[in-house]
Length: 112
Image (tube, rainbow, N blue to C red; front, top):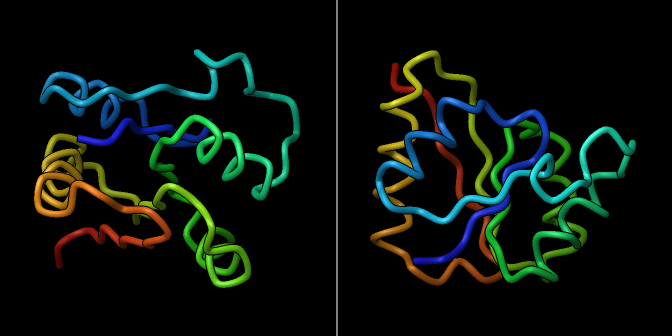
């Protein structure tokens, strides 16, 4: 399973549930990169340089960035979902089905 890199706005309860499910998740806070006004491109580069899939809720900006710069270790963009456990499970399901996300954009949407 790939390592994950959560940007500074990604919900902590989802991160905690992913860890409970056995995933290696590094946050920007743990990496001492939070609150530095990094650009989205810099955040994606941080994840790529660590060979980690980026987790973000900043869908619009990162989808555009993916189109311009598809050279990354994977990008998972999520809609906000107050069912944090359910959201973590949907992410886990994708990661188990697709263990290599290099240069891929995955969208995790809240169920309707």
